[in-house]
Length: 269
Image (cartoon, rainbow, N blue to C red; front, side):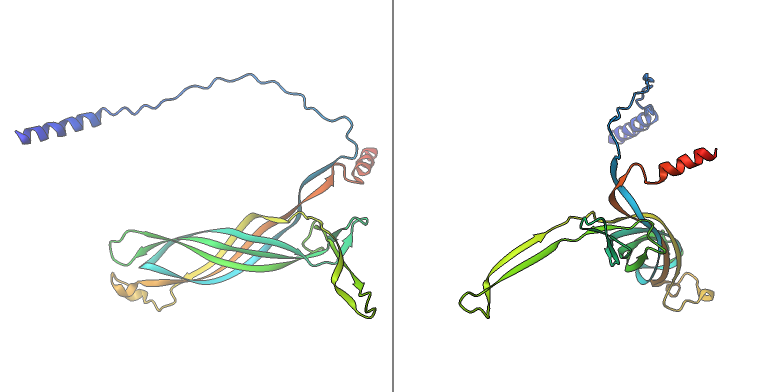
């Protein structure tokens, strides 16, 4: 009797599985009417300025890295390696020469050092040792760091702007001992200028890579045995990393000289 009940439940389960409803809920969208809207523009704008990210440089850095990556379990063959670059730091440090902008306390810098730090994220797909093993994956982060020189002649399309504050200290003579300064009385004056921090954006990365086992490997004797596996992967990577360096700056909507050049072109027509 118990066997009959179990068989009946199995038949019901098979029957219910065959009647699974594969339909999903959906609806048809109705197109809404749309009409052009007239933009509202300030009619009194003359000599307007906007504050936007300005491209300072677009450069390609070549990063050379060598690393050892352990494999657990050991591998008998590398199938595929996928790579991405992540920046954890990209800082621009001005080194001059500096030129002041109209006695404002802000200076343009004709040279700078770009400090870059990050890692290459590698996803390694490999076959473990054995004749009938499932493929394994390993994610490794290979760090890198360095700097690059950016100069006005070859790298900087637009100059970065930085302001420098001042600190002054006034001292007093001891009234009792005119030949000695007072060490308990000072006058301080300082000014602070807050700058827009330049930042970076990734554009592209191109990888050239050599991966190999640091131990000897005899391919002629590589049958399904423990001798045909390796537990460490040595890699030599050359990465051409292209990025943009930007800084938020205030720029005029009408570039000086652009209107005159446009008028000259019209006159030629």
